[in-house]
Length: 125
Image (cartoon, rainbow, N blue to C red):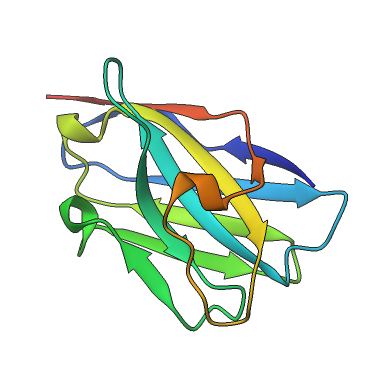
């Protein structure tokens, strides 16, 4: 599975961005998907994740109510809608995929087998 993340950029605080993660090589329909981020000097952290059924999701506390993860299995793509962005959201964002059971939501980086190359999100104050 090859993952291509896109949609990052520079935005002012309070603005929005939509990240996309497109997969090739294999259908994502039976893969749990996650978005992670890593800021300079920090460890990689999970931002949001979604089961392959799309029924269950997970959000880290700092993004609840602002970010929404979704997936379109027909397009083999996962999205992260980011609203009300803050300077603390500045990081490189990575998408990841792993085969799993339908309603399970993997939230740990070591659970993921495939990673995209990352897209930079910079939020100015």
